Length: 224
Image (tube, rainbow, N blue to C red):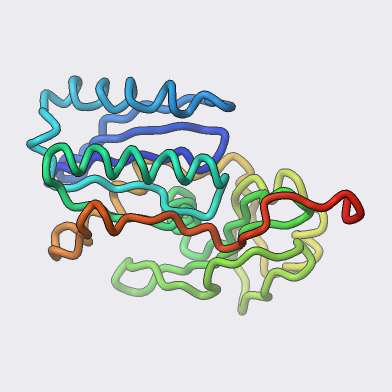
């Protein structure tokens, strides 16, 4: 299968072309330039792979949580690409993609959500190598993330870079390692989307939608 994937949910921007497990990718720290960089990355991975967009089996995107603007960009671009070549789409949780990137059997994912909160989820691998959701994605204060059972959990994401001390205190001895450098990436989104497309569970482009988790964009003056 040939799967094109994109992600603009954080300050990083990435695109990847997944061909039966082989990946061509582009990524960069984009700041506020996602909309400028993303299409050139898509063109680059398609060109390096020697594929036209019409030869792709599906378009995957990081559906959230993350930056509201970034999620809208990824969803809109995925829809546009899918519409142009009549392709199915698949949204993949950015937190799930972070767990996959960690290469650890038990992962607590925390993205900085601003406003003194984190986007949180926890996953573990089962005996078949499939990811199980232990804690569903949510937004909460660092001190309110759910506890996890047992030891051997790896914490990952920008939430640990910003609120590391609080999160370590909350998780205690359950935590064995921390990877602050992990962020959602198109290569992991593509790999997670592969079984979705293989099973024929891709969606029509018009059904693609971001997953925001929360509606509030900024703190009020009194709250700040």
